[in-house]
Image 1: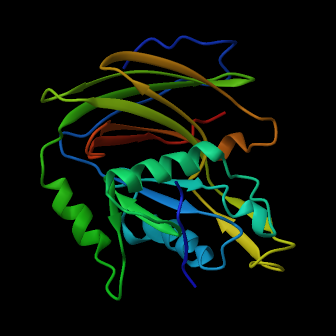
Image 2: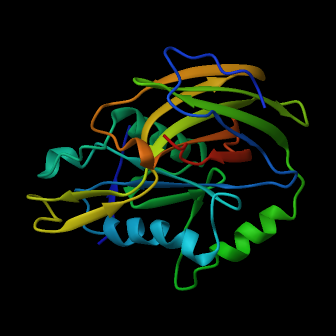
Length: 250
């Protein structure tokens, strides 16, 4: 049951010795969209959405065609099960996008495609939507370099927009292949699987060069970590371009 809540190539700078070869990526000449999932382990309608986003790469929607990020929100935590991936700032991000889209409710699971609410409905048309977006020339250019160290993932990059506006870039460190045995709440006794789980989000960064050092928790699986970046208009929420650097060999 859906639940609704009303809520008022670059040189890499490092913070330590590099453990592996640096990983780089440059955005495509066409537009690559961003799909955001707002989810919670405390919501019994969220696991199907989690499974759906995990299946996208097997449907041909890999990171070269679609960047996916899963933001775990915290407003379900008080209802029986504290989601270990949830962060209050992800709830704030979801609230801000809904206010921008003039929606009075915040709910899970929510899918957002390039800043706009995406509802799957009876017909899953995501592949067609992604294909249509790819016909547009990129509205921004991105370049990323990732250098893992013993304690941090250091990210440097550049970006620029093709037209003047109020766009900014965000970078996210996310993890795949996660699982939780839920012991309370609506998903009690279920084992939940997650991919694209955002561990940390940095930004916004103004046009030009940027750098950020993501601190890596020792409990995170380094082989399953990856970095994504996206250029987003602050007022409209439109995502001009998105890019993923896949997990770096270590």
